[in-house]
Structure formats: structure tokens, C-alpha cells
Length: 244
Image (cartoon, rainbow, N blue to C red):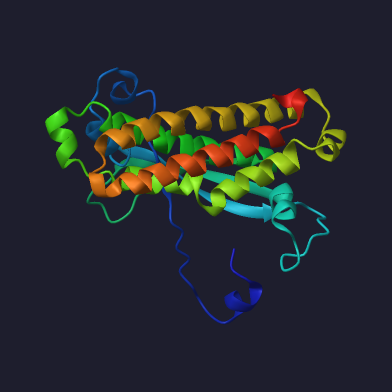
């Protein structure tokens, strides 16, 4: 909601960007062999559910936004996901569509970490499916910029530092002392599994990337491989033995 000061000064139209939620039970998504471009089309068509996210800090948190470390911010990052159900499919030519129902899903800091890693894994898997079936002739004409950017964002960006912080926060003894119940331990294992899955997915995507790049891009590919080896070997040895 806008601040009271803003509301006192007049009338405002509040606009929030929504993310479409496709029906994953639709045969388009469940039938093997459906071309990726068709699935991608249905990600944003014939959709009735949408969501937006509100980021919150822990209630009673003692951390100040300006002085918090990155690890503190991660440990305090709660989110609320509002899901809206429309009476009509989108896109359409109507001027408006009523919201017939809504739901709220609250996620804890570790659930947010799991979701962030899984979202990146899904993005990489989709790119792998898109480029892997190309023939030798098609590979020469393929534009792999999207795959290059996605791999770079995992291997050589602040997100990788974020994963390192996830380990420091959620795999540490202090966290387990405060959140030692069974449900929390299961979430820690899910986070560990998501990180391990990402290692395997990145390795496969690098193989696909290698088969598509031009000779001019080979030094870039080699640097990605080298940084991936350094990052993930370092990450592995930073995971406590009991979580391996």
C-alpha cells in the first residue's frame, strides 16, 4: 500500500506488474515431445491466474536496511505471494476483467532461497531443451546468447555470491540451533539438493554451449568452465560434512 502521506495528497492509481501462472496440468506441459516454442507460447496465453510478490522483513527484526550485511538480509527476507484468479483468460480484447478469487502464500527466508535456485535451474533446463536437439546444420546458425547470459549469471555474477551466502546462513550451526525442528531440517536438505542439481544442470548446459559456439567464442567458453570449476569446488568444501 502507498504511504499515508501520499494518500492524503490526492487520488492515485496504483499499478502492479503481475506474473502469469500457466496451468501446468494442461496437456501442453504434460505431454512429452511438445516443441519448446509451443510451451513457451502457452506460458503467457490462455492464462487465468496471476501473481505478484511483496518483500517483507522479519517482524521485530533488529537489522536496519542501511547497515545490514547481505547474510542478515537473506536471513530476514520473508515474502508474500498474492495469487489472483481472473474470470477471463488473457490476453483478450476486453477493457477489464474481474478478480473472482485470491490467495496469499507466505514464504520463509530459506524457502525463498530454494525458490530462487529452482527458478534459475528451470531457466537453464528450458534453454538446454531448446538448443540440444539442433542438427549440425542448425547449430551453425543458432544464437546462443541467451544460454551464454544464463550461464554467466550463475557462474560469474553476484548470484553465485548469493548461493555462497545461502550456505553460510542456512548450513551454519547457529541457524540449526534456532531452527532445529524436522520441517526446517527438511528445507535445509531441499536447499542442498537444489544447489547440487544446479551443478549438474550447469555442467550439461556447458556441454550444449560448447557444441554451438563459434571459434571466436571458444575463449569465453573456456573461461566459463574454469570459473565454474573454481566456484563449485569452493562451494562443495564450504558445505558442512553432515549436509553432504
